[in-house]
Length: 126
Image 1 (cartoon, rainbow, N blue to C red):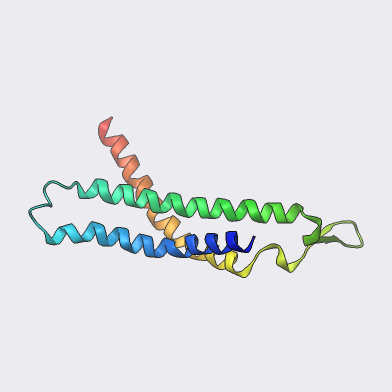
Image 2: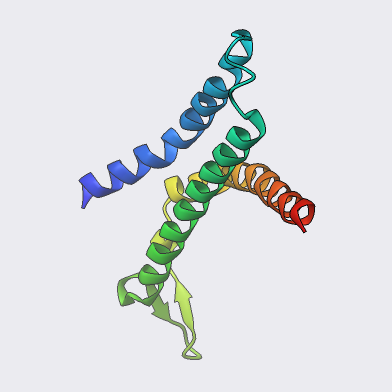
């Protein structure tokens, strides 16, 4: 179980590094002007933003499913005097909370760009 947590944490932390790496790969060809006419930069930016937004959504869905499974586990809640569920502190780890917070800007910025270009492509073809 500990190995799986470390793997997920490494994958989630590596997302900003992968994003910076993708942007570096996109910006680098601009210094080599002979390659620039061949590469469709708008399409590369659009695909890269879609991949980053998709990765952020997958991280969020994975964390949501794990938190949902913990909320159904009786070890993570107790019943109060009135019979209602009261959740314990350990239902969401600090690392999960931090990763969820850090992936919000990536999802919003890259997802908005991906959707905006997709709508623009659909409108311009019609």
